[in-house]
Length: 236
Image 1 (cartoon, rainbow, N blue to C red):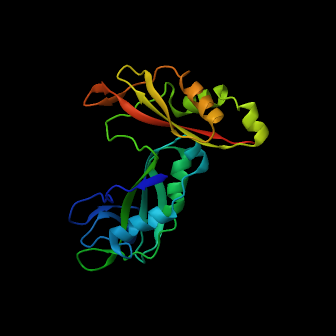
Image 2 (image 1 turned 90 degrees about the vertical axis):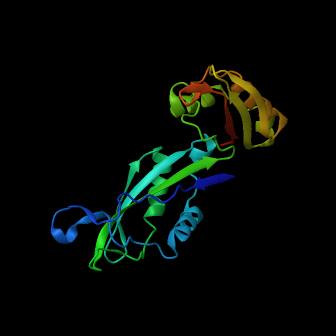
Image 3 (image 1 turned 30 degrees about the vertical axis):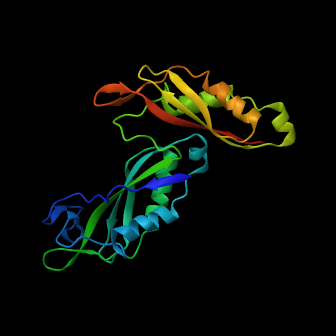
């Protein structure tokens, strides 16, 4: 399973119409105004729309990639959406998917100033991509040394497809639960989702080869962190 968690919709600004000039006066973009723009059905409908349309990128899912993407866009005077961009990146794969869905948004009720006039308004939406075994809400998750790219490289260089599974065409996604302790050691290794005993054994073998991780941190102190490592066995 995958989860797309949308934090509370973020609107930068306070109460009165603060403006950010973008050229001519008629093209002013407001960060906040008297009546903020609204997606048809309100915030709940907006979150539902995003949740229904986002598709977890296949490669991101295969390597266990997660993250939070914040998109910014302008809601025009006619309620259309323009200038969609990422203002807080997670990874190019997740960024692209968030952008794709933001570009599907349309037909908003436009924002209005204190005179009741429609105005252009900047809006921000955060989207959090999470997979099975969602991580704890801590300051900093444990990290493989060198980051995600090094993690993917380590897995690909060490995994060997069991010959018997290859001959029989056995494929699937094995999930391995681990605990990264306060010193970064990989402990409590166990199979969370099994596919085949031989594929499970290969995933366990590779996990046990892992070097120390950078431990998770919370309140300035290293802590134990639960982590789920996905292994996707796929024949070409």
